[in-house]
Image (cartoon, rainbow, N blue to C red):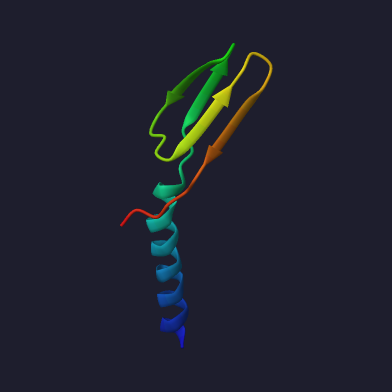
Length: 63
């Protein structure tokens, strides 16, 4: 039974390491209507005017 808890902990660690890299959020700077993306921004949409900004990011699993 001791091995089951160790195995479960290792599987949980592998699960979190595997899915952690796909959920990184890029740094996005919006200033005076200009949009600057620092990093990878796949499937993200950013709209900006001088007074407002809208950002949508779709997270996908990468195999």
